[in-house]
Image (cartoon, rainbow, N blue to C red; front, side):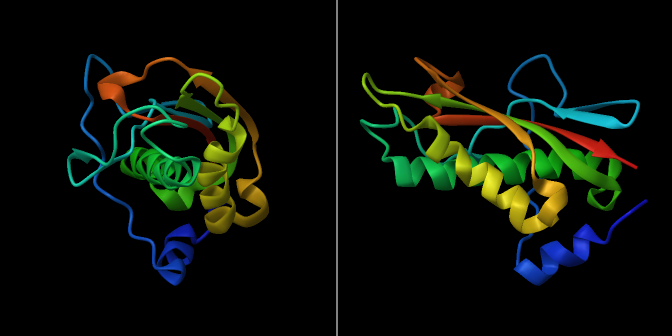
Length: 153
């Protein structure tokens, strides 16, 4: 069963970005059976990392939440490039990593930026299992990274 998610994106005024080029030896997304796994996506737009530093120090939790949204858009772009966004049946799992300053414990709120985007776009089919993990460092000193697993039809 396919949905018209591309129309929903247009209704929301959301344009999927270009797929972010891999920073190392991997591909942006892989399909196996009826699942697509994305690589971890950084908050990159227009080829540029939107922010650097630790959340709770150089980056506020509110800024990081917006960055997580960009990561989710990048993950969705990777899915779209591989199978087309209209093939999505369900967002199954989201994993978010937050480069955290000592004492910062707001990782779930940061990763809500990604989760809320999936909810806006996919409605009930956007409800997913999730992990929000605090880490000491991310690639390129990014504040946040998000990956997703989606079911496709």
